Amino acid sequence: MLDEHAAGAILPIEQLGRGFHKSLWLITLGVLLLCIGEMIYAHAAASPYLLKDGAEWAYDVAYFGLAAISFGRGETTERRAAFALAAILGIGGCQGLYEIWSAITAPATDEIDNLTISAVVTILGSFAEAAVLFRFRRSHDPIVEAAWLSARNSALTSALGAGVTFVVRVLPNRWPQIAVDALGAYLAFQAAAVVVKDARKASAERIARASS
Image (cartoon, rainbow, N blue to C red; front, side, top):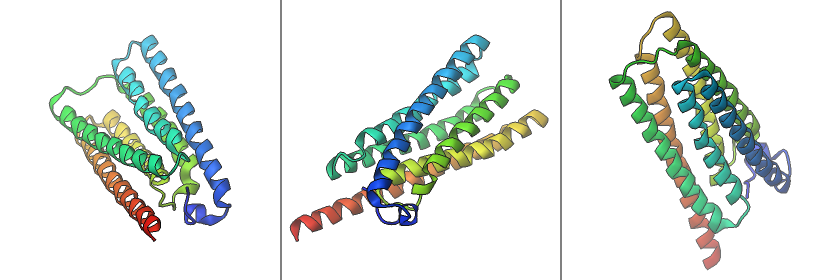
């Protein structure tokens, strides 16, 4: 259920709930098509970089798909899903740390043009996610919050990543990308902590209501 903070309570809560559920499925389907499309293009272009980049969209498919399946299934299911989404956010943070390590130890990619394509696709995909969920940004419902924070983080890091892509084309240097990966890891861990906090709070409130 969405709280009254969602979208400034401009719409009835029941309508917001239906809208949010549809938004989750829209994002899941859209990202799935984006994932498949980029991987097909990567195969045709024989680009390992784009193939890896396309496969990473599967993370979003699983994340928003889990949120869509769980939302509206009852407080217990939603609470468990919120903890699972927080865990996925934490895994995303660990992936960011791994990307930092890879950027330091592995040779830089020479697929500069494909790096640009990746940046454009990532911006379009992540900004579309954030735009769809923007009206739900004030909700403290754990699942809604988890979805919005993930989309917000992706949009922010993709925008910074586009700037890094420009820097790499002009002056090859790994450190800007490392800085973006570090920010992405921090945001993922921070979002996971917020979701866990609100999920625990919602659980405590449910127990208090049951015992009163």
